[in-house]
Image (tube, rainbow, N blue to C red; front, side, top):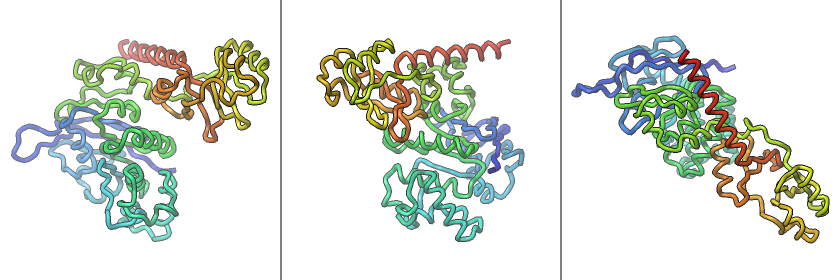
Length: 385
């Protein structure tokens, strides 16, 4: 079992020589074991500076830094950084080294033997979804942006660090790849339970990635630090409210997954079923629509009563082709986007083999939003008592 660390900053500050204005001013915060804390705020507020203070790439002018209750403010900075995984937007892979060599950077510095390093490299490549036999001996120039960012994450995990610092790690990638990498990283975090400080300027990414969010103002002054749900429901002041922007209800769908919904058994028919049998399925389920599924229970087409009556014994071209699919671990925000892009206005939930697990409808999202608001209101009442 991997030992994880907590992070605690006590009145940490940074003032650069020649200026009287602090870049970071008396910052105090704690990141518990296994939590993702996202630092978010406007450009120039000190988010990245705070990360570099934690691993002492920048030396603090004041305050103390603790990792797992050990004061590391004055320990050897190189030794400290070997305990911390670090991922940046620019990735920073060594272009003249193979992928395996890049991932092995910290284990090699720690004196691991070759067999252990090779095993760890292959383990990490598989973990981030890259086949070791295909990618181990490639070089960074041979990778796409998304592949290179995966390697950057693997390198940060090289020596199984207690703590990871991530500075806009997915910011330079196209939206589709970024969404996939976010989902993949959250899946990994469910397994690894690292203590992570994650920097972004995107509030939607912060809501999706963070167990808690710290919204920073100038000089890394914390304006509000709390769960995504509570920040969206109860912004602390006008600064936070303005930074969140409009559409907070929709943003709130980013921290709930399809797996949290109670989905009823959806009416389905097979290609071999008669129109009369299919109509009876609709009636008995009091449903306007049913799904045609194949032998592996994979959804194929949406059919209503009129479609069934006009099918003439074949459902291959009847109704509407199923276009919207999500996995059970997809966020409700991603699911909503799929639903809006689909002519049916509903989304099929499928497992890895494509087999139907349920159907998400707009009523499910309405219910999830209402439930989240009620829970946030109850939490607020408890704090006010």
